[in-house]
Length: 102
Image (cartoon, rainbow, N blue to C red; front, top):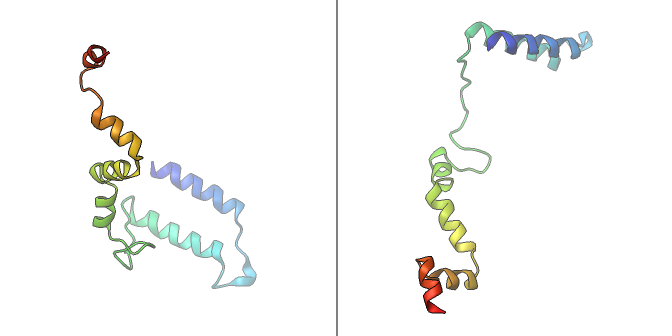
């Protein structure tokens, strides 16, 4: 896995040349240094997160709660129209009951 990633990185370097006129501030050079360092450190390189929140300001725990199946089911229920809710409430539970009512 790491070997294929490294080959892709080398291909990217070929396509993204270093601009010698921007010594010390060239993006291509910076990326090469950072990726080389990450490959030296190994596959499980973790970069520290400056904050425990995302762009929205929510924490990981809040996202887990919002994206849980139960919460999504509640949102679906809230979005149903009144007619659909009434149909579901009064619909027969057993398909045979529907035919008996007629």
